[in-house]
Length: 112
Image 1 (cartoon, rainbow, N blue to C red):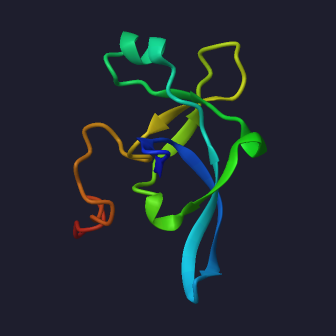
Image 2 (cartoon, rainbow, N blue to C red):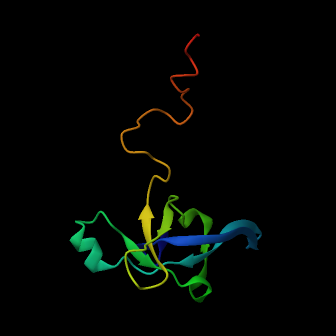
């Protein structure tokens, strides 16, 4: 999402509308993740983005249109530090499987 003129990751808690100047304005309450760990980002040539999560300590309200995409934040278990998560842009995507998600399995179309 766009937050303070920078792209940041956040967990949406909920969406709501608020009447501002006689207009319903769609907003979101989000918990903002810390910036990606620069050391891990550098070691992985930008492929691994690991961020700290602070829960209710970093709650902010943002315009819903500030949210630009949806990603998965998966626990990063390669360290002793708690509350670290890495970014996954295509959750459920299996490497090498380029078929659409609703494509029938090969077995389903075969006659017996």
